Image (cartoon, rainbow, N blue to C red):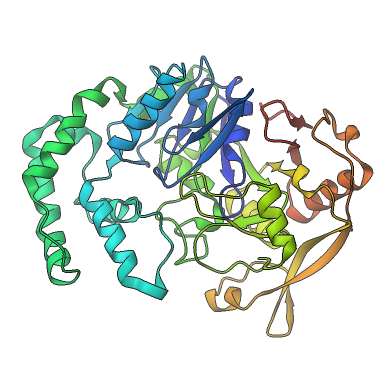
Amino acid sequence: MPALVLLGAQWGDEGKGKATDLLGGSVDYVVRYQGGNNAGHTVVVGDQKYALHLLPSGILSPGCTPVIGNGVVVDPSVLLSELSGLNERGVDTSKLLISGNAHIITPYNVTVDKVTERFLGKRKIGTTGRGIGPTYADKINRVGIRVQDLYDESILTQKVEAALDVKNQLLTKLYNRRVIAVDQVVEELLGYAEKIKPYVADTVLVLNQALDDDKVVLFEGGQGTLLDIDHGTYPFVTSSNPTAGGACTGSGVGPTKISRVIGILKAYTTRVGSGPFPTELFDEDGEALRRIGGERGVTTGRDRRCGWFDAVIARYATRVNGLTDFFLTKLDVLTGWEQIPVCVAYEIDGERVEELPYSQTDFHHAKPVYEYLPGWQEDITKAKTFADLPKNAQAYVKALEEMSGAPISAIGVGPGRDETIEINSFI
């Protein structure tokens, strides 16, 4: 009954797709349990690069069943577009399963997301504008549309009417937008019903039966720990729970069935969107990390904010997720620096703080306290074992492991599928 959770241990964009793909050949199911097409995973297979947004990375692994769980919000048009794009490239997508309890991102959710963000002006959150937050808000307010609703026109119409009763008031009277017609929304949503019907299933039953049959199930989080709605840098967060606890609620699999929780750490730190970022760099080092690391958002296309590794955040991720292992990615990007700063603590109002402050105000004022580790000049992309790494690269990895509080069991030394050093097996 090996069930593993794989999640981002920073602000997202750590390379979860690469890690999931590495494990894909060894697992039977890969499950997305939260988020929507605001997440982006880049997977490199041979000379082919795949950018996935809504689909689980396991869809690229033959023999693996990819699952979109009940905790995900689904934009049907994006789903069908991604499936079509993969089919055109010869990828078999027929095994995909979608929970009938997953919520649908409707056209009015997207509209509300965009106009609200514009209305906030300087106070904007930095959302992707894809309707994610408003869809989760509808879910909590119990006016959401679920995948299963597409197969009962009467219920679908009633739910759309209930949602638009309030939203049209908001759109017309506050945002000076046009009324959204109920029948137009219903017609559009019904148009997706038959196209996605072959994929719809009782995924809670499927996954629990799979675990009872000793199948290997990998739960794949989108975004990252510091973007969690409860445990992230609120309010500059996503609208769901990318942390390990979200894997249970977002899939219907109980916590006693989870055997390992793997956190993905980038060898430095990046962030997309607004919000505090203590180690952010505004100099040539930051620009070099962005250029060498190819730090542009898969989903947003926005340049990522870049900074040095933050061990305070890594320790926090270990604690709130109960991490058993780390997968360290993009170590190769750091090749060429004489010294590499690592944030080991914060200074807040003249005091040294070793752990992430719970106060939003304190975190906004946190200044990084750095230790400097010697760099390396050798190309590490061909390294196959830990011993193949330069001594200074080995020392850097060991230092990060000690500071972060969980063993580093794999290291990414390049973007390719085979450019990974496995120290300890995850399965």
